[in-house]
Image (tube, rainbow, N blue to C red; front, top):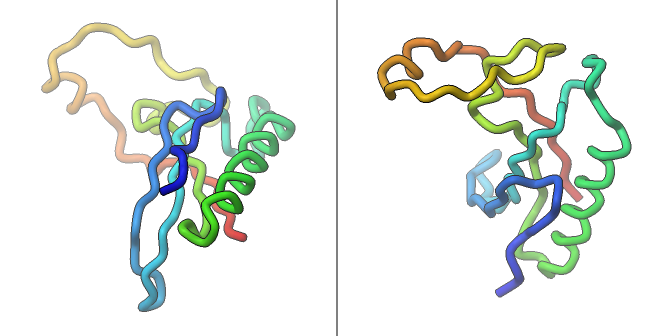
Length: 113
């Protein structure tokens, strides 16, 4: 079994098995705090490229165990406006956090080898 993916720009990473077009695939899902929207003024090409290269290297070292990777933002960042920093974290009950959460979709960046 290969070593787990670890990188300073990744907050978490996990291999997930899914079915795409009738074929079972394993994707490396990498959670990051980096801005992934290229239209944003906070998007840092060099940092996203560095994390992507590390993911590609990890896939090569996995020797066929992983088919590709996807970069996603942390779920708590999904409701932030594109050019706005994530809201400060405050202690609230689960009910109030849930009711305040937006239904906007996550920003992602996909790649496969």
